[in-house]
Image (tube, rainbow, N blue to C red; front, side):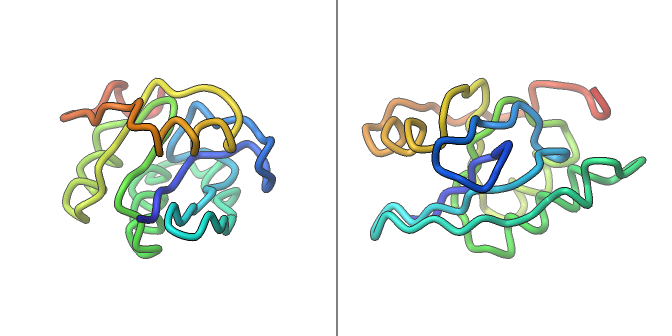
Length: 119
């Protein structure tokens, strides 16, 4: 299974970025073979609007089935939902730790956004 984790940097010991649309990077992890690919999202960090939707579209295009992040706004959540991607929020820690917790089934999926847009 592919999961996308918001990341502050392109390395396994980077922290989970608390923002979805304006996260610096996405760690795209394949839990079947433990590979990690990093997607640069820095173009959306300074975007005046639409960062969440664009980031969500990028994640959907990777084939990820789950997004793990700190927070997710309504437009990004809707785009992910329509793309068949489940969302986990409230996550902190290093990317490598988050992957282990996901594999152990320690996260629950949400049914709606947890922050307003442009928080």
